[in-house]
Length: 420
Ligand code: TRP
Image (tube, rainbow, N blue to C red; front, side):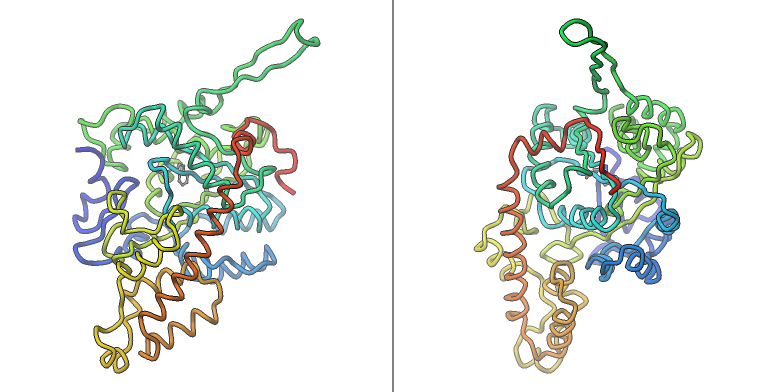
């Protein structure tokens, strides 16, 4: 098979890499272990307080509740920001499916907050090439999915004057800059800019085959497309990959919000950055959004009942939550009143932790439910309301995204006001 055993070889029990996330049998992902193994840092409260101070706005729920829990050099980004140096944000999505589930929205909701709070530009990579190779989709289908997914991403509320969305198939090969020397149609000079690809080659030259095998676990059976892909995901970490945005700003820092399974790509990137004369990209990393069946399970594309999709109707949401959301409540009312719910394994509580913004209400529910005074049915009812509202809001926002808007976000263009 392919790279799936990459991070798992040393520790057979827990596997976390860009292609596979699975906990030790019957257990949960051990995030402390992951931090140790990957060598990133825990996101301490002091850093979150600092974000509050520097941005003069309350830290996002995902920061307050520890959804984003690990980082690399985030403190350096904040140091630089405090000195008056801006940075840019980079995130992405592999367009492997038509409909996104709530877990897919998490990094984008958070990135939107970061963009607003720090007032910085953002590049979003749609790795249609990656999914074409790993999911065995055709080039055409991958490109179509990238555009469809771009609509969901735009629906998260990004600012078009600060955001560049690109698909690898469209952007990586470079783009044409038409310079009119004399009024057209007389004479025009065509310049093809392909600094993205130039950076890929620079990165490729710094990484040996043994190194990618060590990081990603590729085997001799993997096709060479997979082996060359990590440079594609690394390149956006360097400002010169976007000459229409950051020309002459090779010193600009990059910060990447992502789920922690993407860490291997950026370990590799950080390794090569100083050799190419760039800052190492900083990272802020999230835990995984749990499946309805519980944190031991995996959200699986083949099981639509393991996740809530942004296309689910109110009825679907109600049915899925009531039927499948793993409950930490006791199995009889008497026992529940006596012992209370086990909040550690309770999925409705976990989901409310992501999406119920009111800290006081969440605390109230946790207390009452944990003490057995509130029943599972009541907690699920509140969760259904919260999720229905969220999905409804997303649906409305997505319906308002036109093809022209997608073109506008994806146009290769300067962003004159991106730092204000
Ligand atoms: N590989 C990611 C995925 O499959 C997509 C991606 C590309 C990404 N660049 C990124 C994710 C930067 C986070 C940050 O979803």
